[in-house]
Structures are given as C-alpha cells and as structure tokens.
Image (cartoon, rainbow, N blue to C red; front, side, top):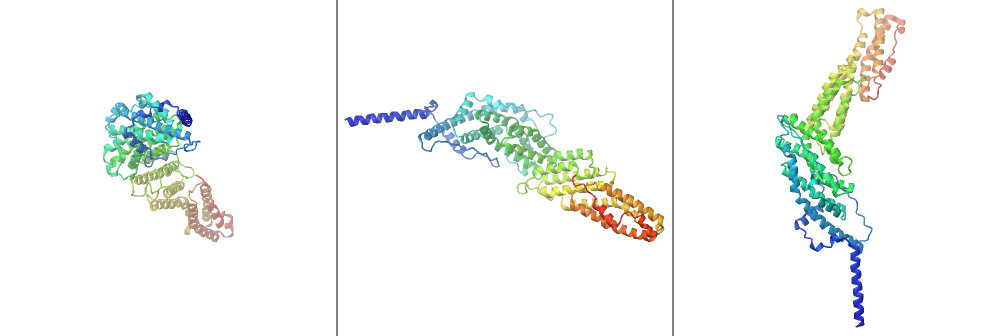
Length: 536
C-alpha cells in the first residue's frame, strides 16, 4: 500500500513538471485554440505548391539566408520552436485565404480607376487623346483590413522567412494575374505570326502601363507592411513581380528582334511601344534600382528599351548630331562613338540573341542605321577645307564601324561593303594629297631648262613640307592601315622624285645640290612621321 502511494506521488509530480515545462515553452495564448481551427483542404494543396520553387522561368535567383538555430534538433526547446512554427504556418495560411477573398473587391476598385484608359485605343494615330492613368500607390493597402495586414506581419515573424515569402508571393502573383485577366489584358508570349494583330500590341502597351504604374507600386507598399525588414520585403517583392515583368519584357523583346513583314509596325507600332517603355524606365528605376534581388528586372527593361531604340532613337540622333561639329584631326566623330556604344549595349551572344544578316529585322535595322550614319558622315567630310583630311575622316570612321561590327554584332553589311568604301577613300586621299606635288615632278621637253627645273623643285619643297607638317597632326585609327597608306605614298612619290632629281642633275650640273632640299632618305623620314596623333 505504501509503495502504491509513493508511485502516485511520484507520477503526479512528474505530470505537473511536464505541464509546467509545456507552459514555459509555449506561452503564446494565440495557439491554445489549435483544436478549433479548420483548415480548408484547398489551402493545404496551395501550400504544398507554394512550398516549392516559386521563381518563374528566367527570373533572377533569390538567395535566402540560412535560418540559424542555436538549439539541437530534438531538444525540448527545438521541438517547442517547431511546434510554434507549425501553428504559425497554419494561421498564416488562413490569413492568406482571407487576403485572397479580398482580391475581387480590390480588383473592381482598380478597374474603376483605369476603366477609361482601357477603353482608349493606344496604337492608332487617329486617337485624339488617351486618358492618363491616375496612379494611387496606396490603393491596395487602403482597401485591405488593417487587422489582416497586422496578422500577416505578426504571424510571419514566427515562421521561417523563406517559407513565409514563398507563401505570400505565390498569393500575390495570383492577384496580379487575376487583375490582368479581369482587365482583358492576358499577355501571352508574342509569336511572329501575331504581329499583325493590333489587339496584341494594345494589350502589351496597356499591360505595361497598368502593371508598372499601379500594380507594382501597390505591391511594393504591401510588401513593406507585411515584411518590416527591408531584406525580406525585397525578396518578397522580387518574387511577386519577376514572373509578370519577365513575361512583359519578353513580349517587347520579341517585337524588337523578330522579322517584320509589315512596314506599319516599323513606322507606328514599334515607336509607340518604345515611347511607352522609355516613359516607364524611371518607374522601373524607382521600383527596382539598387535592390539585390530585382535590379535585373530594371536592367532588363533598359536593355529592351535600347533594342527598340534602334528603330527610333539612333536615326534621329545621327541626323541631329553629325552636322553639328567636325573633328579637327580627322578622327572618330562623337556620334560614331555614340552609335557603337549604343549598339554594344543591346547585343548579347549569338546563341541567345541571333542578329546576323537575314535572321531578324533588328539586324536589318542595324544595317540601315549604319548606312544612314555613313551618308551623314560623308556630308560632314565635305566641310573640310582640305579634301584629303575629309577622306581621312571617312577612313577612320569606316574602320571604327568595321571593328565595331566585327567584335560586337557580326557581319551584317558584309566586309566587302566596308572594304570597298575604305579603299575608295584611300584612293581619293592619295589623289588629293599627292597629285599636286606629283604634277610638279613631271617635266616635258620644253621645261628641260635650268630656271624651270629650279622653280619646280622649289615649289615641290614648299608643298611637300606643308603637306608633311599638316598631316603629321592627323589621325589614322588603325596602325596597319597607317603603315599601308604611308607605304603607298612612298611607292608613288619616291620613284617620281628620284627621276626628277636625276633630271635636274643633268640640266643644272653640280650646282643642283644647292636647290635639292630632300634626299631620298629625307623623303622617307618625313613620310614616316605622317599621322602622328595616336588618340582621337
């Protein structure tokens, strides 16, 4: 009897200790009513989907910091933490369901805000005026119950943050898709055969404007409220926006890079899309710039905008800028630099972005832009008082374009096109530069008299010195081309000069040395100093 009494006492003490330990480890009254919570099976299936990878195809990888826990797995404290997180997850999922139930009301409110804009025609010229979108960054926040946002924030703090962000972002991505569907702006991947469907282009323009001006700013505000730590808010925001951003930008990129059989697109549609995207770049900047997890979305928008800009912006830049200034030493025109720099930014490797001739309309546009630049440079070259310098100017700019094409974007115009134009300007340079002094070295029978020969030699010395002095301050872009041009002049000038010196010796005799200023080696030495400017 005493033994049984002792066992009862010991058992009672042990049970009481367990109850006290449980109350210490799990003090939150929020979780004491777990038995009364009903979890919708639909939410459980959603959570299983959400717990996987949520990054859309081509979206930037979002690194998630490891969740450090100082306790040992299986310890009472660790078990208590796991229990609290499991309960917090159930609560969080129930709040996510509440959030989803608010979607229809919020979407209807946004629809009223953009209703007039959705009715407008944004791709036709006869549209008198397109209504402006009245942005409201706090619209979604103000429509949602404050208590619901607080519950999401408080419960989310008790969960693993990567899981919390995944569940939340999955819910909000669904909201964005529901918005565009309700607005009639489902943006599917653009196909080449759909370019003649204006409704597709119109969906793109409207989808871009509404998404970047209204939906994304509202999602940014909501992320900041649910995730007080900016790091977690950035992760969630990136996951929410990546899929839709990539889809829209892929749509625009296809428009910019595929073949166009309809000139209407080049003249009207692409400029409209270009203007839309360029106007939105500041919004992409403010939303994504400097964020570790989503700056690639901003960079993607800038890149696609530049690709569209080949159709619109570069030609305007060329016509506007080339005529403004001449380069004193015949070097590379600033506009040539700008065009090449611009093109360099919009090209990627051939595997992901094929741009060789015949592959895409983008290639054709690049070729057309280069030809427009070439014709404007030729007009500029005629402004030089010395025609020879004008041809040097054309040689340099053509060589620069050829190097740019070879290293950046392949053989669009063809090397023969460059070679022909460069050789033509080299020949014209030599005529302009050397013909005058070569004429002085030509002697007919009537001029085989001392005074005439002395006069010719004096004029040759004067003009040769002026040419060498002036052209020593000119620039040639390519070292091999510089050597080639000097060698070509030597091959033309030296034989003619040598013949003339022999003739003047015959006519004047030993006094000829009084009038000969340059020996053959002196001529070669002066020619070797042409085009000494090394950076232009």
